[in-house]
Image 1: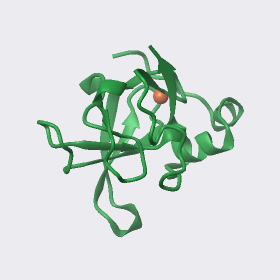
Image 2 (image 1 turned 90 degrees about the vertical axis):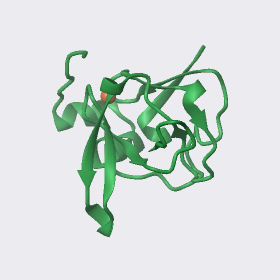
Image 3 (image 1 turned 120 degrees about the vertical axis):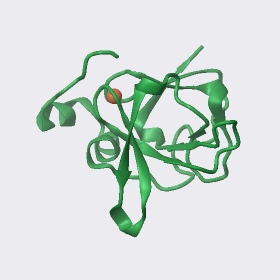
Image 4 (image 1 turned 60 degrees about the vertical axis):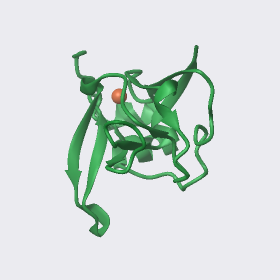
Length: 131
Ligand code: FE
């Protein structure tokens, strides 16, 4: 596991755009179908917009119809961390970047792959690097 990245709130505000800050540091959610990567099919890797940690490969991305980028699995099991989330009156599993603890989105048990998982991730939490 790579070393944790821990910054002050002021450093995060300097480093991130207001929307990135809202999603990553305040666990915000971009509106469905508005994110830059929602329908992107290009070959490459999705990095954490907060710290550059490698999160998802494009070959695990699929169109779930949800309005957010959807993946069947992260690049490695230890690249993201899952937390119970009972906010907004729902019981969900929150997914954060394991390196900077930035909020990415949630994981749901209705994915199309062998593991049955759907990682529902905000575009604003990621930077796409084409291959
Ligand atoms: Fe990160």
